[in-house]
Amino acid sequence: MRRKFTKKKGLGKKLDMKLIETNKIKRATLFLGIVIVTILLTTFILLFFNPLIEVNKLNGKSMEPTIKDGDLVYIYKSQDVGMKNIVAYGDNKYKWYSSDLNSFFGKKSEYIIHRITGICANGDFLIEGDNEILRMKECVNKSRIMGEVIYYKNG
Image (spheres, rainbow, N blue to C red):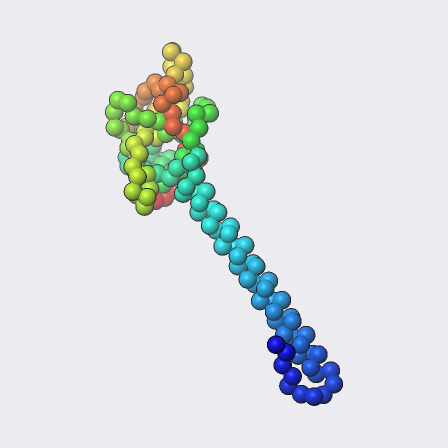
């Protein structure tokens, strides 16, 4: 709906142009807001619901000083790992280093988080923690590896 404030020539057109400019700015702001919300929502979904990435909170000291007790780790689920990678693997023997899947989702997973340091005589990976005092070595078959720790930060 057009408003006319005065009957002077040209003033009505100026007001109409201002309204058009204001509407353009409002539409651009709305579009930008939708884009930002979409990016944030996509990032959230990829981080927390991605079947290839899992977020865990560590419980234990065997990877100190690299990763500390209570730190969050992001595990990329893949068996394509190599030397010096920090990996998460299934625990068949001991419970040295268990981790809870983000309790926000109410799920629990138990993994051991250690570093690949060599190859055993049978071809398995030699895996051990970074902590000099608590260092335990184990030969782990590739089939037990759940994934590689791609990122960690203070919990």
